[in-house]
Length: 433
Ligand SMILES: [Zn+2]
Image (cartoon, rainbow, N blue to C red; front, top):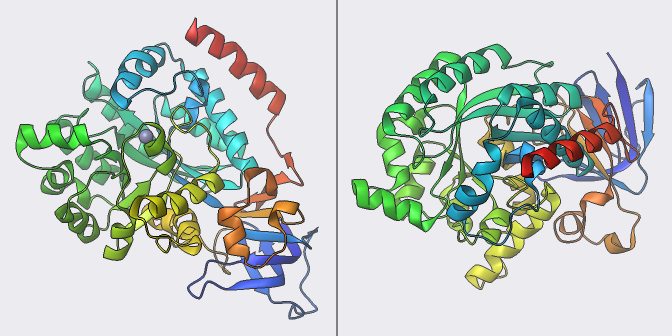
């Protein structure tokens, strides 16, 4: 069991009191945070195998990307500036038909490298060839929630569901608990209700949650109302799907007051994806209203083909800015609320807040250490303001995941970055040829 002592960094705990401890010491033992001491309070007998000097650094809980399709790094920049449905039907889905399992593995490895370098310690994924995503989680050292995407229009949809349930059972808790599984019905408009009821039964059988896109576009909601007289949220609630534990609903852009009440009542984890919603012009999710109503709101990038990166610090900034310009009120989604979405909010939305999202003794040691000795982060009036409005992925120097260094002083540990670039380059040539 390894141990690390991180000395003299400013620790942003994100605990209930939102404590920020200047020049504190933090002890990691095994997979967990074993202790945090304010300046000068560390007992003399605290020892660790290795030490990290963190003067001028800021230590935060690892950022949690609550909704993405990591292997879509392969399609980053391949099709931009299009509406969602033509973008999917004309560009994305035809290339995805050519995907092979190893493409997904290497695309996810590239995503893991990018996320680790950006201080992202956990991601919630939905994609094809989920075993490959799971293998990339195991090999890269990142923490991942993996669900196989289920699309009702595929001829073998039922067979795929059976495979996804078997996968969810077999892999849940693998890699020392770094891997968690869910079932991933793509959306209500791509999965018929009879498939969704089987998904619910499968989730109960496997003891896992459900990850779904929900009310992303106005068209989706309009079509649902025309076909059934009800909104997608209401239909999922009536079907019982919102009672799975947990339910992670991505986007939730177009919601009625009743929808918001239902999401709160069922404890659904909403993942806000401001970058993707802006790029695809899907609309602006009613995040201030959701927060006011007591909804669980996390934050995600969505896939790198609709963002186009996996930089959660950028996403935090977008979340803080978007709702100000949209409501005309500069006080909504203040910096601390935006940072909370990317840490505790995402952890709660994924049902993992008992172990992730805060820096506290007993929590998993998932941490990002940022170098604040930089012009754009000086002077340090307000650390949380700087994290939200001024910091960038490139400021992240060191990252711990499950107690192990995944990035150490700017160097990714345990991934051959050159091999990842070479594999992705070759595979992408085939996919788009
Ligand atoms: Zn998505």
